[in-house]
Image (cartoon, rainbow, N blue to C red):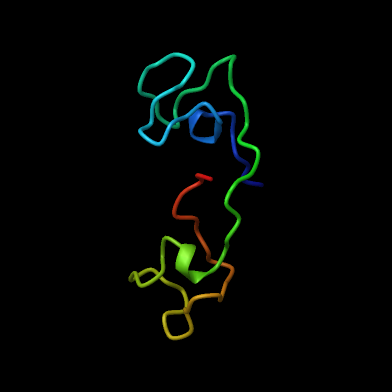
Length: 82
């Protein structure tokens, strides 16, 4: 099963740095979406050990090899913000 970004507020260009919707003027989270959703133009696509949530953690699949610029099949994003 493929993993895809959904039409949630976390991927909307109307989301502010403070986690508020510019359109509705309320605090939102990645569980919300609305009819005014507009996908961010670009998403951060920097996949390597430094951007992996497992980097320097006990569940790192390759702790001896993990280093900035490297990537393995167990990479997990820290977040999905631009």
